[in-house]
Length: 109
Image 1 (cartoon, rainbow, N blue to C red):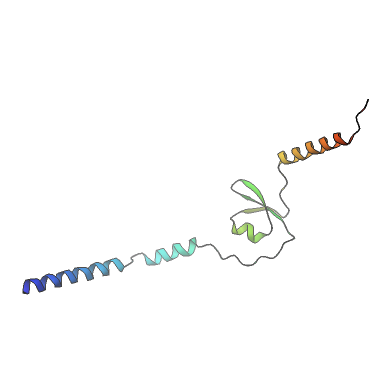
Image 2: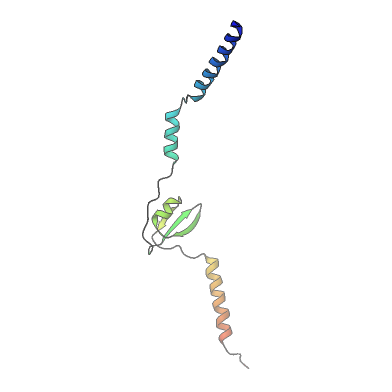
């Protein structure tokens, strides 16, 4: 009977020790600092619908509606104007304009 009581006491003590060891977090302060540094800044309300900003993100240029949106997406603002259209898009527009202009001219006989 004493042996059985001692066995139960040992199991309870081992379980309690495992619980205490498992609940201790040695680097609690470090993890809190990392979490605070990694958390993005809360995005406030941004009101400037008329302004356009050209910003670079991942090596590509994008036009953003305001500075807050650009910063929230991690882009670096390079201009306070909208980004210029890519050259391919400009060439395509010019080609369409030539086709329309040619279609409007009457055929010569």
